[in-house]
Image (cartoon, rainbow, N blue to C red):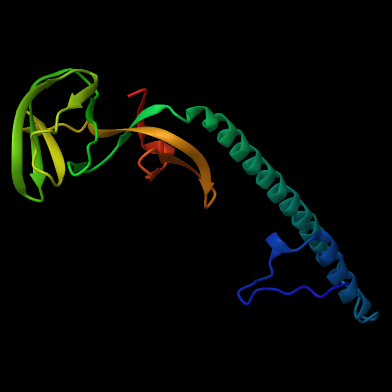
Length: 200
């Protein structure tokens, strides 16, 4: 047998020892046992329970690893249908350097809300508007070039069920560091959980 090279931070435990290795160690300890000091039956039963636990942990871990791999493949295959689809993703920043389409996704119909565009604490623009439930286009052509945040108020209170969204087209689907990732046509990579609307 070839010797196994283990990393410096390797720690042996019940969750990473095979049942075969455990049995070899167990039999080796029996070989050197004093025949006049018989092993307690309860200790032997305890060892056998540990052996079963090792076997169970290994098979359970393999089962869940197989399930995770299968789910990733299914998710990847089903996500391929998203390619070339238009989406709106949630964003914290209104970037007017790019010629992008922005939306406000509202959880309800609101009349006469105040949209405040901020550069840090400085107010760049205030607009009064009505929001309908769902997607509302946000026109940014008359806002100076920059990166801003927005706040929306109704009767002096900030609305929490509104989201700033950016429209994009999905160019490709990939798995990066074990996570499903979408690439937009502008080259940005996003987590699918940031999608707030399909079809723009």
